[in-house]
Image 1 (cartoon, rainbow over the protein chains, first blue to last red):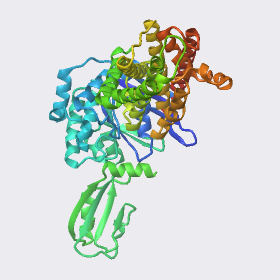
Image 2: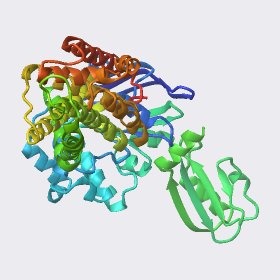
Image 3: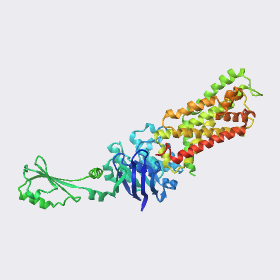
Image 4: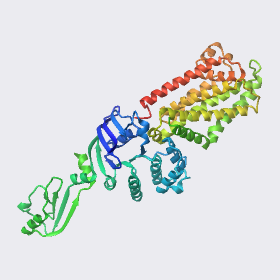
Length: 305
Length: 253
C-alpha cells in the first residue's frame, strides 16, 4: 500500500531550467526510501514540494490519500521534515523548541513524549540549554527530535548526516532504523551512498530533475552491479593466449595482472574453465582478488549515462 | 481552525517579547516619557490649546498612538522576518496551519505587545498630569484597531524584506516622519492652510485624532472618519496579504 503518490509532478523556476520533470513515484507504507542524486538534481525540491515549502508547477501529490494542495491540513498532519540546513531558533531552549513544533501541528503538550524523544536522542540533559549553546551534532539531533514531536506517519530526512562525524553518523543510522521499526515511513536524501546502501529498502536515483531509476535496493545492486576478478600472475605474461583474448579480459600494462569482468550482462564466468585454461598455458597464479561494484559505482554509472 | 497552532505562534511571540523586556516594552516607554517631559512639561507650559485641555494632556493620545504604531509594526515585522532569516519558517509552512492562522498569530501578538506599551505609557503620563478618558471603550477600539492594522502592515514588511536594511526602511523613512507630522505635538489646525490640507493625506492624523476624540470629546477630525480611515487601511493590508499568500511571493518559490 502506498502512503505517498506522486503523479506527473513538475517544477519550473522562472528564468531557469525545469527543476523537476514529470516525476511519478509511489512510496510504500513503512519503507525506507532513499533518494539519491548529485547536487542540484532536484532531491530537495521534490521533498519541499511534498512538505508544502515549494509550490509545484504541475502534477498531483497525495499523502495518505490527501491532496497536498486542497487537503493540506490532513496531508501535512501526516508528515514531518528534517531539513538539510540547521534551521533553529537559537534563543530558546531545547524543550521549548520541541513543544512549539508539536503546537504548530495542533497537538497539545505531551510531557512524556517530549521526555522520551529527548532521551532517545541523548538530549535529555540539554533540555534546558538554549539552542545556541549546543554543538553542531546536537543541533542536528534537535532537528530530528522536533520532527518526531508530530508523531509522523512519514518522516522526511533531507541529508540528515551531512557534515557530522563518523561516530555520530553511525548513531543516527541506528536511530533512523529504530524509527523505521516503529512503523514510520522514511524518505531519505543523502550524498553518502553508503548510508543508502546500509539502510534503504528501495532506492530512487534522480538527476537533472528526472527520476532515472526506482528499484528495490537488493535488486538494483544485483541488476546493476558488475563483478571483477583480478589475477596477479607470478611471471609477466607477454602474449595473451588465444582462448583468453576476449572483450571482458584485459592485461595490465606491466603484464602482471589479468582482469576479468563479469556479471550484469557483460559475460558469465566459469572459474573452473578459466583456471584450466591458465594451467594449460602454463600461467602461474600468484593471487586472486574479486570485487563487486558498490552502490557508489552504480550511481556514478547511471549519472554518467 | 488549528487553534492550538495559532495559540502556539501567539505564545511564542509573546515569550519573545518578554525575553527582552528592556528592548520591547521599556525602551518605547522611556522614549515617550522623555518626549512627555520635554514637550509636555518644559515647553508645553508655554503653549495653549483650545478648551479645557492643557498641552500636557493634549499630547498624551498622540504619544500613545506614536508608540503603538511603531511597537506593533516592529513586533510583527521582526516576528516574521526572524524565522525567514534563520530558516525556521519551514516549520510554519510545513505544519497544518492556514495563512490566516499564521497571520493572526503574529499580528495579534504584536498588537498585544503594542497595547501593553500603550497602557504603561498612559499610566506613566498620570504621574505628570491627570488624563481622564471620556469614551474609554471607543479609546480601546481605536487602540486595538490601530495596533492590529499596523501589526498587519509590519507583517507585510517582514514578509517582503530580505535584508535587515529593508526591514528598517519603512519604519525609519515613512512611519517615523508621518508620526511626527501626524499631529502628535500639535493640532493640524495650527498649520498654515496649505500644510493643513496636506496633513489630511497622512493616515496617522486620523489615528491620533480618533484617540484624541475618545479622550477629550473634541478633535480636528470626526471620529467616524478616523475609524473609517483605519478600517480602510486595514482592508488594504488584508488585500496585499491575500495577494502575497496566493502567489507565495517571497515565501514559497
